Length: 222
Image 1: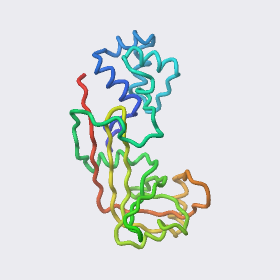
Image 2: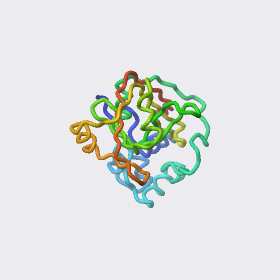
Image 3: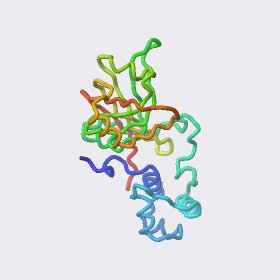
Image 4: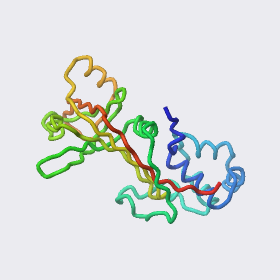
């Protein structure tokens, strides 16, 4: 399995390292300007769970000639794509291994199926059970009724406005409602926590027949 560092790491870490490269500072020089240890800056750039204080982020932003909002990726209430595309992006086709690496941690994706109004995409919390996508819903929803369709899909994606980068993975296959006790027990063990309230005790499993993905990257000189 591809390590997560091979598929981008955290957004904050990449914003910091990319901005540092743009202004031509080594990690040691940037850390000195920000009044922090080089090892701590290395932690912020490489950790999967960086959590700088507001003061540290402000000092680092000043040292890198930018703003704390730019480093932290502020603007969650606006639709993605407000900052425009980079002048020299690279569009990459993801390998199947890279696709799995992106979606394996779980999170929020979109269940895609056909409804009376046409194609529909419903955001849901999901996790992987082996190489199958599993999510929870209410048995009265249209999503639960869509499992009878011959082919459905599941999309997971992410856009970083500040970096002008993003990726998307599309999984297509067949879906079923889990009913066997051992399957339900395995699904319960995934600890999927839907954000919406209400009863959501129906588990849907999508078994992939095809998985594809693309990624837009900006390669700053280092």
